[in-house]
Image (cartoon, rainbow over all chains, first blue to last red; front, side, top):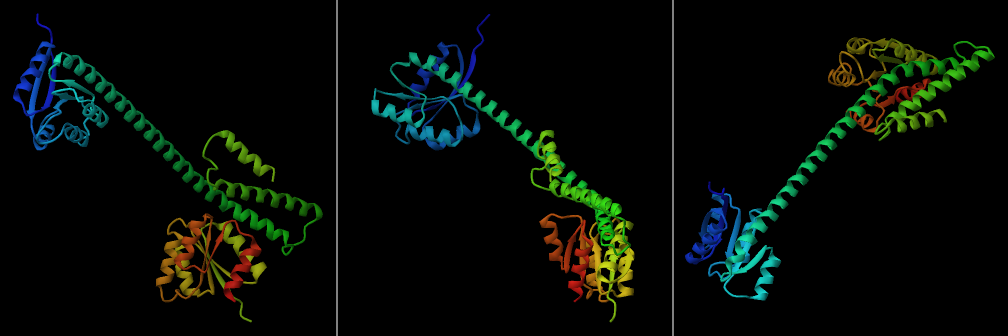
Length: 239
Length: 122
């Protein structure tokens, strides 16, 4: 029974067809079921990125039509986080540093392709880790947004409930407070001293209820827990 | 001296009664009482000097009543004062911008109600 080959789709940016054969041979030896496509221009690279999903990009550093860095930038412009490995004809330290700083994942010499397969395996694994991390962050963000939306909805509902309740309380308070004050004027008959004292008690408590309804409409009055609600009640009681 | 007349439009029996008592005792006004829809009829028939209009009416809200008073040539000249339990600043500003002479928040003090109506009637 044969070994299950890992499928791998590689976009090769190079002018030399022979390089493609050499690369494919290395991956065949490395137990990959490889599909690759060679492109020489930016337009051809963009067309391939549009047509198919790729797993990695191998780019020759020395290109007549466009540079490896430009190929990398095209990949980035397409918002694709794929392993991007640059192949050099010969060792060029400054150029290698430049492509790494631009975002390439590794550089290899074309004459030493034995490192190609293990390097690719490593970068494919790293790319998968980055994808999983992004997925987790996106999920967390969604959960946070959902929680925030629910919380905002709850606060809106509470606010609407308080506004309605406030209105319902003010209506009977209007009659209560006005009737008490009219009696206190004495124009509807003079009460005994005790009667006036009881009216004062009624007036004072009607005032407390009005103040409570005023406090209900303050921003954040009912934003959180029962501890805060009991503080609200206390502050009105102490006045 | 002719006694000034105020039409009080409110669906709450108790509020109509305390408003009437406040305006008769504290301001010496003659008070006509009405609920929402009959308020439009009474405004046209009685031609009060001022209308005190509740905002939260059950079958036709106070703002709609106000707008109908405004489009009727027989009542558009009568100053209207809104009476409302909606005490938030933006609600009150909205009501003023509609064209009301004043907005009085519930609960009201009888003396305050009387003073405001007398100020408008002067």
